[in-house]
Amino acid sequence: MKRTTLAASLAAFALITACGAEDAETEAEAIAVAGEDEAVLVAAPEQEEAPALEPVAAPEGSMAANEMALGAEDAPLTIVEYASVTCPGCAAFHRTLFPQIKERFIDSGEVRFVYREFPTPPQQLSYIGFILSRCAATQTGAPTYFSMIEALYERQQEWVSGPSPAASLENIFSEVGFDRARIEQCLRRQDIIDAINENVQSGVEAGVNRTPTLLIDGEPFDYGRSLDEALERIQAEVDARS
Image (cartoon, rainbow, N blue to C red; front, top):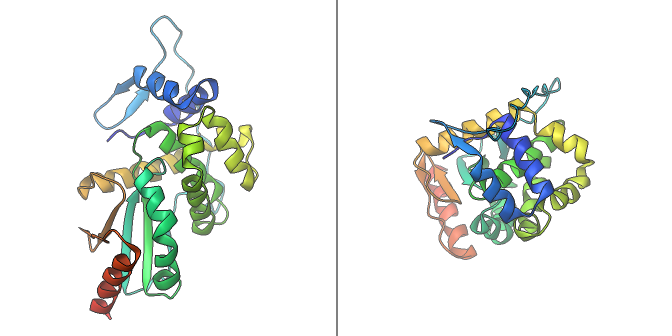
């Protein structure tokens, strides 16, 4: 699992601004040099090395690098989801099952739901979506983060597979007042990139190899394949801890 860097996040956005999603992924892979734990984008040999990028400091009191969770901290059951905003299965889960899980268990205080980023291909696009979602949550925390994650899932085909990913992302994040300059500033937030990379690493250590993966007490939780089955299985886990 490759992690991203400040340079990689900006380079990826520059690429998708200039070309389509498929071309951007091809170009990004072509200039990616995999280190032991991360991908570092470098200039082509015939070009001069790009100047070092200055990270943007987190504003005082920023909540962008916090754990992104919904529900009471003292809820009897905590569910951790590892997911990717470019994953169709994750989008399906959040469109069909998650709203009912939230209404029945999270809003009632029975479940605390923790969302952890685990970017999947096209990985650079996934990182960009996650970085911008966390950046949008700088002042307001988890509620805004989850609202942007849901927006990315709802419009996944548009910004992941459409002809203009950068324009689509700009349009989505204009809902929280972002313009191109603000997006590029967000992509230089090292605190956010570090938070996402930490979640990726924790997922690797937990043995996550597909998304979405739900964990309870560190163990994979099979929520079934229907709404009724998911609700019944979560209710059984809540009852076992009550």
